[in-house]
Image (cartoon, rainbow, N blue to C red; front, top):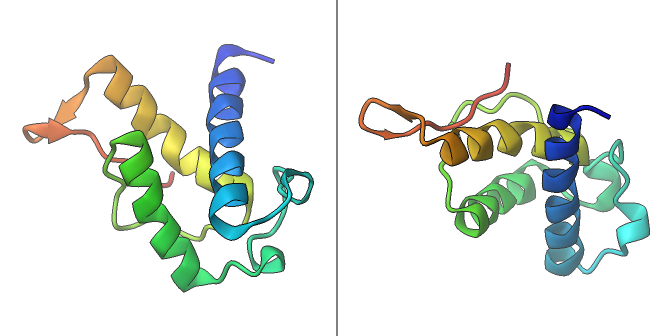
Length: 101
């Protein structure tokens, strides 16, 4: 595992913990490739959860997020924003926000 994979893994663990607490789901059901829909998390619930992620990590995520279908998709969206925050990268006078590649 390289450094990038390790960082996404840390973010993934944090998100899994948040999902577990927020939606009363056992961690065992929150595997990386677990479909959010199979957990009862629809697109509206995902959007609401994104606000919780922003609050928890003190970040701003891009409005254009692409399709978020798995637990890993959430980590892949959040992790680069956390990295830019840690690096102090700013765009247009504000902390860089994330988008899906």
